[in-house]
Structure formats: structure tokens, C-alpha cells
Image (cartoon, rainbow, N blue to C red):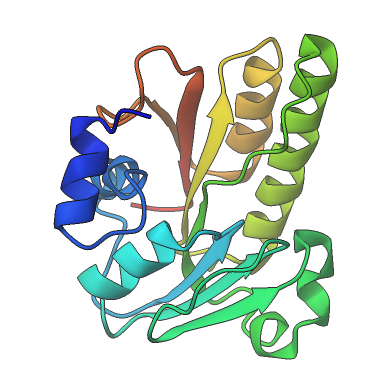
Length: 190
């Protein structure tokens, strides 16, 4: 398989995936990454976003959760659990309401059956949104989530607008042109 410029750059700069440049662009545009804050990475494997946050904000406490295993990222607390089980992880649940940033690059397994895939994406996005809303600091928390352009996007964005003061849509330059992926950003206050 042919590696694109973003993948080559990620390898040269020591990152796990090209996805870090999607996150980087959104963080730069929204100014959501501060020097020291609690960060929650939902659906963190393979760990590229957690690694990026830790590298750019070494004083931040990063907590990562995924049902898939993730290689160790120095300074990141990783839990191999489903998002539905997050409240049972004491070290994370004890920080409920204190996260300055929640990030999620999670996507369900695609079946190839459009109606099922759209519903699975939407359900996972709602679970992620609900989790972020519960764990974010309500005075200044920010949320970044991957989703896809489909018939449920308008409904998802409306749900985000009920939770956040600011909601924006991003299609970062590092996203493949043919990909339907986009990112939603929500913030309580900026």
C-alpha cells in the first residue's frame, strides 16, 4: 500500500498515525489545547492522538480508553475497556466534570450495508457525545469528535448544539479527499 505525504510525515516525526495532523489542525484553529489540563481520549487505539497531546502538552494528564489494546504511550493512563464502562474506572470517574478536553477518533467497524453503517456511526457518536458532556468541565471544556457525512449528521449536530455554546465542523487537510470523515468541535465557552 502506498503511503501518502501525511503518513510519511507522521513516520518522520515519530507519530503513530497520520491522524495526528487532523487533530493538530483542529486544535490550532480552536486553541483548545492548554499547557496543563485533564484530557480524555475516547477510542484511543492505536494511540496517535494521546501521543500527540502528551508531546505538545507534557503537563496535561491524559486518560485513554478503547476496547482495542494500545501500545504504551509514556505518561498516558490507558484502560482497555468499552466507553460504556467508563464510569467503573475509578481514576477516570473521580475526575468527572474536570476534563478540559475530550477527543475521539473512534469509528465503528463498517459492514458495507449503508443503512446499518449510518445507524452504527450515529449510535457511537451519541455515546461519545453523552460521555464527553458528562466528563467535560462545563465552564471551559472542549470536545472534538470524528463522524461521517451522512443522513444523520444534521441530527448529530443539533444534539451537539443542545450541549455546547459553540459547534463547528472541520474537514482537516490531512483527511483523505475521498473520505466522508469530518470532525465536530463543541465548546462550552471560549
